[in-house]
Structure formats: structure tokens, C-alpha cells
Length: 364
Picture (tube, one colour):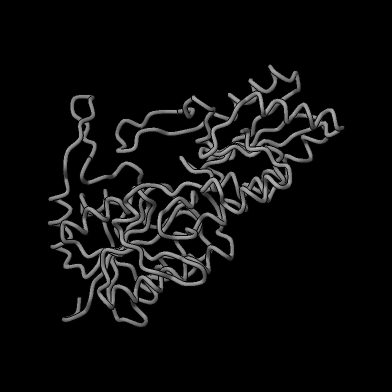
């Protein structure tokens, strides 16, 4: 590194999503091209800082990755330096490795650590900031559940993929006169299910924010059947739950600081609807399809703008913030706000109101 040259580092944490490489590209190219900075890529999220796994990123390294899905740096959903899983004697125990992270960051002589992630990754970033690390965050998640921003990159791509899936399911539902259930990701928020459900013409949309009554869902299906609509499309978020009931847990990942993995609600619903209505039911789980592949043009543009804005904030030493979107502007969102937890769909959200006005049922 040249004398007086700023060095920054980038890491990507949490689940992958379309647009991560686009934002990495934007940060690296602007930092090098306009600011003359040196850029380090941290591999596999916070694992890389703990184990000194990183590499220098050049202009050529990020050329041609705009349309590439995933992340060239790798990622992890378990690497929390404040609650780091260690296997000992076949058992898992958690240790605080944050001191190692702070030492390694100091040794790298970083002007800023750019953290690309959702509420988990950025919650850790906030703790690091409180411990003295200069941080700028970028909002990455298909779930669109980050506080302080109208939208996250990855969300538009996920909604587009989910909507295409619903469109394809429609023809089979009509042909076979079935109730087709499409389960989509979203964690504990219903943004993906709401938007793709509306875009795909879902007859019933189930989201975590509005607990459902299975009997109301069954009545909706039977009512459609009586009117000659001999099929129904149910779009359900993985975190949806019945009134007075719990979310369906697919598995527990013990080494993760957030060990619960949701999934399987679509199959539970399918059995219940078929039992009550007597109508043939099938379930399709979109799952990780929503995270992969080429980002939409919207996400490429959004990621590029977010990355460029992050470099401006680094130059101005505006640390402890995430770059957010409000209206048509990029804004600074305190990481302390982001760390408060996920952003749920408001019950009076315009899209919820619009869907209800068209006859869409939310199971309540």
C-alpha cells in the first residue's frame, strides 16, 4: 500500500442473493478509479477476518461480475465473532472471538470495513462499530426486511423469480382443477409472498404478519369452486402461522447464532386444505431458487448506486451507517436502527389494502 493511500475491506454475510456481485463491483471500481483506494476482499463473511482469509481486489477482478449471481467472496450464516461456534469433542460451544477480529482489522490498517448483509450481518457490524471499527453497511437481502430502507437489493430479483413460478403453476392448477400452494422464502417477514402473490394473481396470500384461520382459507377455496373457478393459488411465506399457532421449523442449525430454519408450511397447509375441502392439493417450494441466478436490471442498478454511495460515505468518514433508500434518494441509516430487528409488513400497507380490495384472502 502506498503512503497515505486508504485501504478498505469488503465482506458479504448471511444468505446469498442476486446483486451482491454488482455492489462489490461498484464499491471496488469507484474506490480504485475515483478515490485511489486499495480494496481487500474478506472471504466467507466474518470467518475471513477471524482466520485471516482475504485477498486484494483489483479493477480486473470485478470486471464482468455485474450479472453474476452469488458472491465472489463467499458468505456464511453462522460466522458471528461475538458468538462463534467451535467444535470440541464432538460438541459445539460458543466463544467470543471479537478480540481476534479487532486485532486483525487493526493489523490490516483499514480505513473502513464495508459490510454487505441483512439484519444479522449488520447487527454484528454495529457491535464492531461500537468497538471502534469504522463501518459502512449495505442492505442485502431477498426478504426486504431491513429497517430504515424502503427496499433492499435482491428483493426485486426474488419477487421476479417467485412470480414466474406462480405464473407457471397457474396453468397446471387450471388444467388439473387443483389447489396449488407456492411456498416462498422471506424469513419472518411477508414481503416476498405479498409482492409475488399480488404480481402472480394469488387467490390467497399468507404472511407472518397476519395469522391465518385454516377454515377461512378452506371456505375461500370452496367458494371459488362453487363459482366455477375450479382451481386456487395459495402463496404462502415460509414464516406464516395459524392464529394461536407457531411457524413450521424445517431444521435447527446448532452452530448458528440464529439456529432456526423455517420451511414446510406449504405441505402442512396442503394436507389441511385437502382434508377439509376434499379437493386435490399440491405444494411447490420455491426455496433457494429465489436467491440464485442473474439479478434483474432493477437490482443491478440499485446495487450499483448503493455501492457508489458507500464509497462517498467512506471518503467523508461517515461511519456507523447503512446506505438506505427512501423514495428516490439514498440516505444514511444508523446501524443502531438496523440492529433493532427485522421490518415487518405493516397491516395497513397499500399493497395489502389493494389485494384485499380485489378479493384476495389473507386467511383472516
